[in-house]
Length: 246
Image 1 (tube, rainbow, N blue to C red):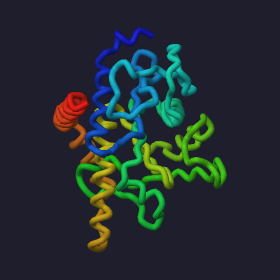
Image 2: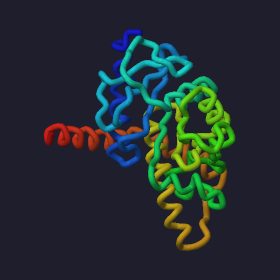
Image 3: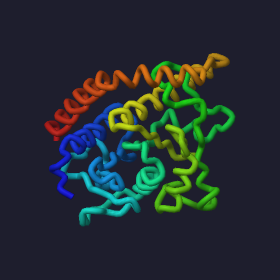
């Protein structure tokens, strides 16, 4: 596969890594992938590294089994099977973010307080957010990581047709039809989790109705270029300062 045929996808993937780091969704860990539009069974994902340092040269192509497709021998992410198995079962998904954003993790372990959308920016979350319990598939002595196809398949089944799946004691995975929407959703999952924790401390919360989730998603995500432009400019400037400093 000649990566020069799809330079915009790779540029967006680099920017997505930088944005998610700069906005506090990813740190040294977590990752984002995008489906190869010219060979839909494959996807692009950075090599095993901190997202805030990713460049175009760090992108590797993977096949439907989560294995390197282009002969690259560099170290890869342990949890690439999150991406391969979701792409395999969800042809509508074009980009995936797996993160451990701090406000989200508590909702993966407190099942009596399920995550729900409470503001117009997070309608994409929908009215049901499943929680993946890895003990059901790997016993009670696993690393909690999705390190093989079997666990990736189980996670994908839990996600089902939803947009977001929480992973108990681990983090979350969000899917989207474009890479820009995936970035937007990952950021606003974290925002919604923070707002929900704050709101719950005040009293009973009025969440979005099912109709509101659908309408707000359609309207707000139609404006995706606006936040993307801001986040990209801010992330690129931050990276430049980082590089100049070192």
